[in-house]
Length: 433
Image 1: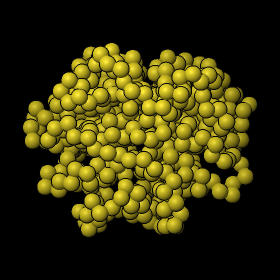
Image 2: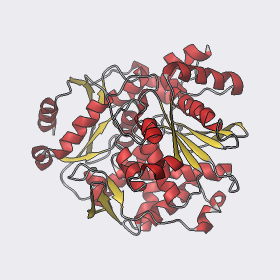
Image 3: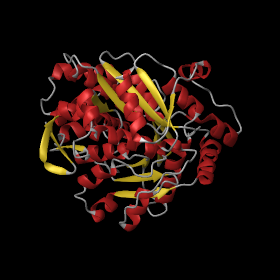
Image 4: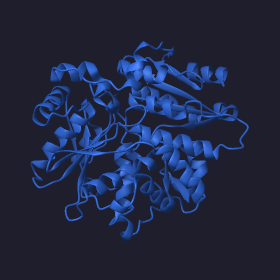
């Protein structure tokens, strides 16, 4: 398997180099040279495969021998350890619950797979690997959990001060050991900019082995494609292919779905559901891409003003707006409407949905106005208990907090406060690693 940069289609690296580097030297994003099609026999008999079997078949087809099959099975066995069940609200509306992992967010799938595959490729290297990750909420907790006490790997998580929920913050600031947290006085985009600049700094890269655990790393996207097949298997309707509704921030999740479609999964359409940070829905409507500073919302994991994975989306569609807009519908939802969505889902279906899922639910209802027969699968990306202040106030009832999250409330936060300038960040890295 070879991968190229979205900024240079003629420069190739191996799977291990793409994963361990995270970003190409030209600041593009790595993409597979080929997205091979899965066999029709596999696609049309998904019900015969377990979730882990599906993950193995997808990886085996995509990696083309880059990892021996027995090693690949071990990686998947140790990472895909929790389910992705479908809950049906009504005949046309389904919820794909992606919060059953250790950090109660969909990013557990990518983080745990990445930890396993990076540990595999890191075997025998004497110099420790330092992973940099920017988070707008859920990525940090998932990565912290996935990489906790992984030998030979240190993790540095950058998060925007005051812009993540209390329990999200505790997930990424209380583990210690090989996990460090930097509290940045800025936005997620500022955190992401610091990470990207670090990869382009020659001095840093000469002294420290750096990699990334954001969805800019291809190892995060590949496992996120698994649950699209798993959802399709559970719906089990090949006559009426589903529309996947994806709450979107950095657009890694929807890119993973696009990869699944390119590899043969018969997905009808995608709905890219955003909050007030509506850069991609605006592009899908107008053809104009105008990134701007992110604004804070109650669906904070989607507070991204310049989504990194948009470059991959463009690459998949040949940088042609018409091709992308035919398959992806974009819609943005403001905070007040999001709250109405949380209440509507609770009152109508007795289902407690988080703010991100509510954005997806409302975007799908809007999509149905012009597609009344659409069958939608809405990705519920985080457990509602991570957003207690919002959800409990809206539905007027207490939300159960899973024990693995509740125990964090009393733990002491450990984080280093830092501004958005690169030099202090660089100095901190050099001093600590």
